[in-house]
Image 1 (spheres, rainbow, N blue to C red):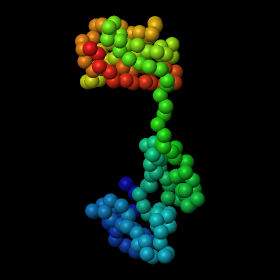
Image 2 (image 1 turned 60 degrees about the vertical axis):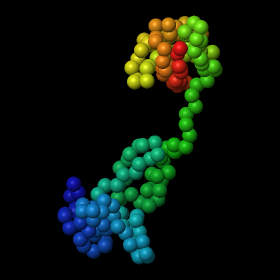
Image 3 (image 1 turned 180 degrees about the vertical axis):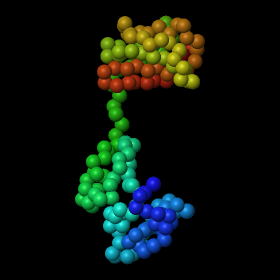
Image 4 (image 1 turned 45 degrees about the horizontal axis):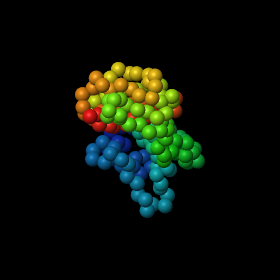
Length: 165
């Protein structure tokens, strides 16, 4: 719904300073004559005759951008997006392995772990959440198979996929 426009404006009927593109029948985006020196994306959008615009940041944040925003403000809004160029580092728990002799999970730096959860590959929790009391967590009740081990610390979550014999 746009209170300033009727069906003609949304279907691209009218002079170029009133409408740009057919928003309803086959063209889901505005059309601009890029070779016309008097027109541009910003100047064409900087009027009250278009649907609301949104910016989508790399982190997935969606924010409404008003058409009355100046060009400098528009560029600043884009620059304000959080840049998603790195992956968060996971906490260092040292070596993590399954001791096949004792059928237990061994975490070298267990003192950093606040809890351990064990899931099967269908995502079901198969071992109740445990807070490690030592370096090992008993897995004797589990049948052989592949499991996901989720260990969380103050610094984040560590997940490992391992085979239990």
